[in-house]
Picture 1 (cartoon, helix red, strand yellow):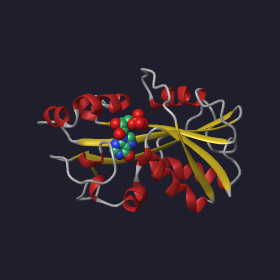
Picture 2 (picture 1 turned 90 degrees about the vertical axis):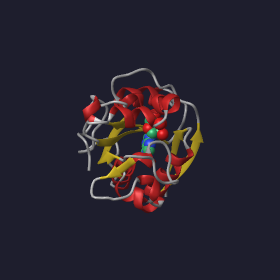
Picture 3 (picture 1 turned 135 degrees about the vertical axis):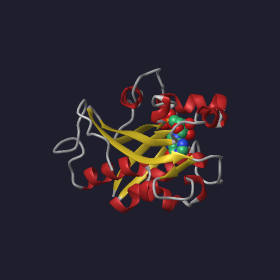
Picture 4 (picture 1 turned 90 degrees about the horizontal axis):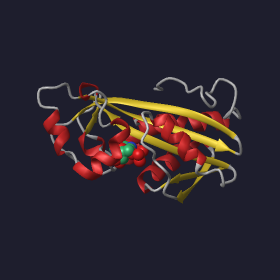
Length: 200
Ligand code: IMP
């Protein structure tokens, strides 16, 4: 068993991360801590700040930052996803998307740290924005996101179905693979400043 600490304020994320890492023999402990989210252009920059803020923690420490990107809105809400949802809800997204492509994707950047070593893992899932919010499961934008090939939103399915394909699960499975292969900070998995491209 490998122990890993996942630092976040979001219990939904923590449950997803724990379920994805369990089959890799990784036991996840959730540390609830508010981490800095500086105004930044990329999720990678936000993750770097979060990793700086958890340097006091020993062992494997995992943080992540995610966003919903809508290409027809120039990538909005993207890195502003959390702030936008808190202040405005889904309404303005439905308004803005009238007559525009509803294509969207979720992206997660996960940052793993142990002592002075860091690695970044990326996951994405493509889909589209529903015409109205549907479903009670999950959190955040789940009620308005329909993955490609699905007829339901992430909020209409159970955690297992979301974890089969989600952006977060894809990024975190790479963490699990790297840890179980003993090459979390080296080999072919991206180290600091060498993020791998969008992952499937
Ligand atoms: P952050 O990574 O906590 O900054 O999340 C950014 C925003 O995207 C927040 O509003 C989250 O609720 C939302 N978000 C992150 N991951 C997901 C997800 O898996 N499903 C739906 N919304 C998400």
